[in-house]
Amino acid sequence: QVQLVESGGGLVQPGGSLRLSCAASGSIFSIYTMGWYRQAPGKQRELVARITGSGWPNYADSVKGRVSISRDNAKNTVYLQMNSLKPEDTAVYYCNAHHAILGDDYWGQGTQVTVSS
Image (cartoon, rainbow, N blue to C red; front, side, top):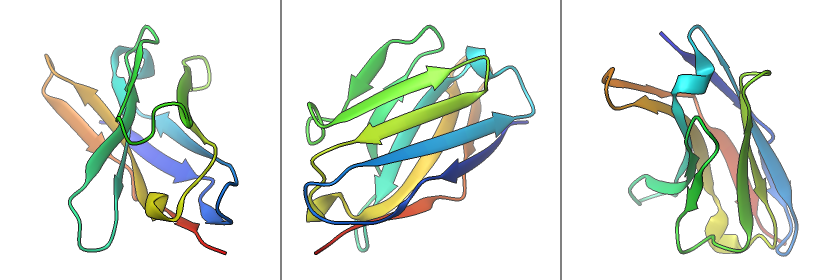
């Protein structure tokens, strides 16, 4: 069992930056691929970025060049640095822990990000 707690969301002006954090507990953090997803009102949840246990990232095309995902396995934490934020980035952002072989898939409770002037 993995528990995930996100933090760092809030209101930011267009062009601003936010850093989201997701603290994990309850299992061996380093074996999980960690991801950030988002869901805007009326839309499906979508992948923003994910990072393997060994640190290989990949990003959705919509955020490439503006977003950076990283992890600190010693702190059981994954981060999402978001720059040059746009109003269309407004959504609830969810942290995910995934392990395909174990069949594990865990979600945090989400943190709201609002980009507005």
